[in-house]
Length: 154
Image (cartoon, helix red, strand yellow):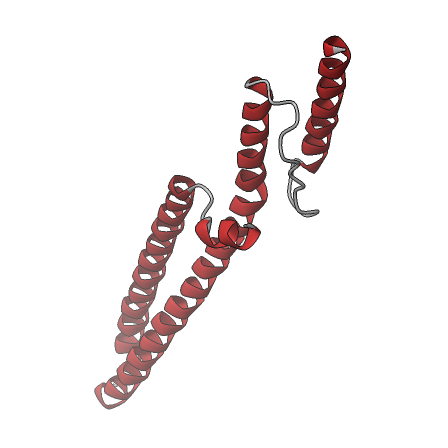
């Protein structure tokens, strides 16, 4: 059962994962646009400076070097931002599981209590999950409600 739950809930709340993914994609695109634009601006400034300071023969050689540098800088920026975007997406996925997973378990547990089922299946959260203390308190509440119900029925 637990393995099926893990596979089924790759993203516990897919709408939240999509929002996170959209934000990462927008940030990646904005970063890439700024970097590429900055590199072309630098290219134009360097080319203009060099053309005013060197002779025509040296100018073509230096322009070729600047063009090569620009291509390498853009490639490095693309690789860096892609790695950064994947790292952020991985972090957000882990946080999605550590926050929204326990929230789903808490909602399910409270639903059992609200419907009068004071003996719901006990759900233990992973140690690294957030809200572990709250789940422990809800388990204790369910136990005390179960005892009260048993006393009132006797």
